[in-house]
Image (cartoon, rainbow, N blue to C red; front, side, top):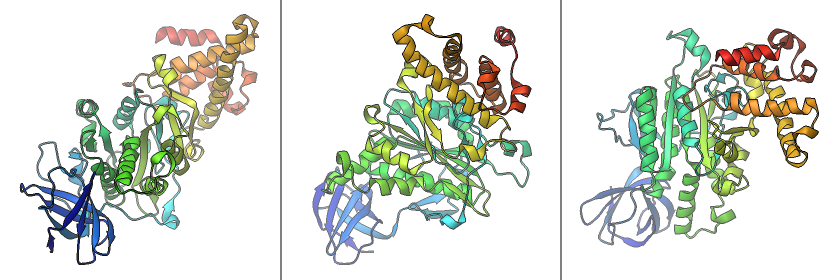
Amino acid sequence: MKEYQTITEISGPLVYAEVDEAIGYDEIVEIETAQGETLRGQVLESSEGVVAIQVFEGTSGIDQNASVRFLGETMKMPVTEDLLGRVLDGSGRPIDDGPEIVPEERQDIVGAAINPYSREYPEEFIETGVSAIDGMNTLVRGQKLPIFSSSGQPHSELAMQIARQASVPEEEEGGDDEEGSEFAVIFGAMGITQEEANEFMEDFERTGALERSVVFMNLADDPAVERTVTPRMVLTTAEYLAFEKDYHVLVILTDMTNYCEALREIGAAREEVPGRRGYPGYMYTDLAQLYERAGRIEGREGSVTQIPILTMPGDDDTHPIPDLTGYITEGQIYVDPDLNSQGLEPPVNVLPSLSRLMDDGIGEGLTRADHGGVSDQMYAAYAEGEDLRDLVNIVGREALSERDNKYLDFADAFETEFVDQGFDTNRELEETLEIGWDLLSMLPKEELNRVDEEYIEEYYREEDSEREVVEAAD
């Protein structure tokens, strides 16, 4: 292994060194400072005679007297089932005072693309216990469904609720038999504050969710370069548990905006020609490399499902980060500032939200036969109620017909009873659909044109008084 003392330039998180041999792209580097500290880095660019190295721990303390060693291998993640229940930093090193991790193997963090021919279509339901998602924007195994939020919104609370509650219903019924796959959550935090990190950890420990989770923490004061490695560490661990140990893995990544800011910072240090709003032109490719690592593989029990969370700068969904994410992923869940200011928990706005794979993951044999109809009917009724709210602001409620007033009441009840459930309530799908029928029963039968007759006969509550009795009992 050759050692060089040929550092020529330091620029932001990058170090440039002269070399006299061919150095591979993405190769791991150790830099020993004059003070005896060893820092890790990765080759970002390799041309004849000069390499650019991005240093994970930042470049402070490095000068021309530092020595550079090229290890001849790319970055690898030590993986084992024993990672469950552990807390690691953004580079995959334990920070929970637990024992050293003895890996079963070390896997390349870049991962291998899933051959499209071998992909299985995602269609099994994952229950999150959140009505706005389970009922209206159902998540299925192998899907990538991002949460679009803005700063100051409770997306962290929603992420914790999903991490705590998510389960695969049919696996539970089967018990811990030989056939069943277990469920695991891998949580990757990028650029979050120490306060947020403490909240996440307290919640994971208090509820016992940590036992089936692996947590990667990259904090706001950690180097930006490490942020670009964290999601790849997370997904390598997820792929190992899913495709080699048959787990159904739910990956939650927060916050993808911080990840993209790190890409922009490194791009600026490399003096690249910036793309839209200063982000690198290859950001679409980079995000696709992460998101496309979700899925199911033919012949394998396990699956990787992703919920990336991103805060939209200025609550603008045309910003490059949500815009590109929307192209790659299969839908989005919107956290709405207006619903949040009304005190709804979680403040999910179902109208712009969408799960493109929902139709294949619900219905008879998957969730419940009436699920699709109930969801469509509630969506239509809530959309009409929303439109009528704008009209009421102009003409007042008295000017509306009795039918219109019923739709207005429906919209209010939909928000307060269906969407607003609290961050600590875990609703089974049956309960979500029953609440849906309670709400649809506020409308006249003839208005229910998106639900099959047989389900209306079975589930429609004839009298509003019955609904009031149920509410009084609650």
